[in-house]
Amino acid sequence: MSDYAIIEHGGKQYRVSPGDELLVERVQTGLGSGDGLDFEKVVLVRAGDEVRVGKPVVEGVSVHSKVVAAVRGDKVIVFKKKRRKGYKRTQGHRQDYYRVRVESIEV
Image 1: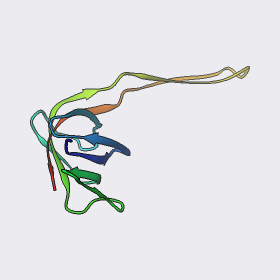
Image 2: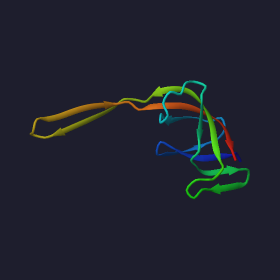
Image 3: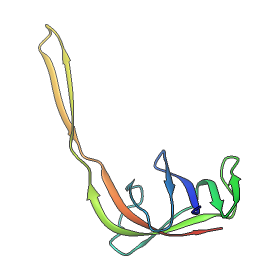
Image 4: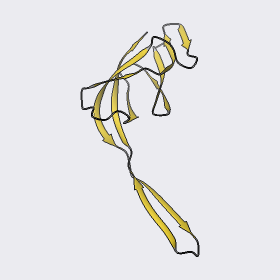
């Protein structure tokens, strides 16, 4: 059984283990490849046979990771229309992400 943690970042929760790569929202700006990114909001942590659940977060636990790359997500098209009124609006959006590799879970 492997150690893992559930972290909260950017309004979403992720289940992470050391060595995992994941896309997280780019909340902090200016980070480049190789920079460290720490997650302090750990909701649940499992180390060995012990499982600790936070109320709302587990105290004294952090997840350390390194930024692999700064990437952008796919384009999402937002289209609004009101029938018979001649109203149409098209808007696009691309979310900024960091691809991070989880280095360790510090208990």
